Length: 511
Image (tube, rainbow, N blue to C red; front, side):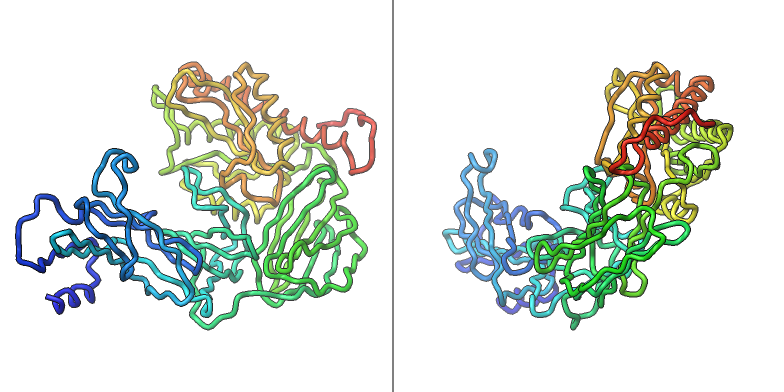
């Protein structure tokens, strides 16, 4: 009997329950094990100090153990929503524990010596801190999440990373790896954007070298040499306007910062060391309105590219990006009459293109036909074309058909003024104001290279709004409103002027 059990264990059968009678076979009225799972019921990697949570449902009043003798506690029916035979407990992983990517074994022994062995369907691996597991980002659109939460827009994003950035993985839940950024700071990275590295690597760290600040005809640049491509997080902060970049795993050996001629947007840059393994670059901006930035690596040197305001803050000659949401196989929302979001957004985007061109702007469209385009394709196109700003057009939908109105969305507070200007003008078309929404976790609100906003024109699920959305005259009104919203944004930016200066309202310029 023991030999048979050992053979089955070697096969790694998941979800298998094997019953053995020490005192002779007899029928069981209730299965000894109905279900056994880890919580969450996903493949996991755990490090010392992490918690392995296991739950079993089976026959009440049994002795249940896992991991070679760790007890599972039987809950009272009151604790288990009235269900009997629910056992669960937590094991804190200890240094030296080993479990090599296998199902967790659970044993149930009844009072009359009936033994049953079960296995979780998912696998668990205990990581050895002495052999750190490393990974490298696969794409320039890799990103980190704050945690494991998900909705239709994905998990809340901490920020984006360049390709080939080395990450120290200390855990896994399902298809996400936990990344140790610094002492007390972790993030989560999706499995599909990283490549695991073979064992034997060191946890990535670097001393910073002295860095330089310079400008060319288009951008201001900060360049800081490192010995590794380390992960980072950036934030655009206000009052005063500044860009803050935290480099994880870096410690200062910066003895000077050379600021060369040609700078137009960056002020007197400096650094801080808020903790031993976090190096903070603080880049003051000369204008209250940020026009975006991009972070990348050149070799192992971290380069921060900071955009300047357009030479003339008016539509004439400005390159504006217009995104028609959805398209092709991505239909989007649909109304009761059959109106489809992908068709409505394209119609409105094309009218916006016409209005912007009439005002003298140059326009780059992410799509001009019923094409299927991934968010990554749109972002890469926009990075190549380098627009001054982006407006993404969508239509909204709700389960309650009485919900109606227009709204605008932004992710970064520095880009809020563009969304607010668009929102005000859209309400001027007669649409009800539904709301101005910040911290929006949508892919096209993620780029930091240019101010961007998403306009949910109206609710296609509302009969009144749907009539507007399908009416070419109303579509034209929306296009004109968005054009005026961009003009308002530019005008307000002119009025603010450089940070620290109070300028008079400028004379009216040709738009």
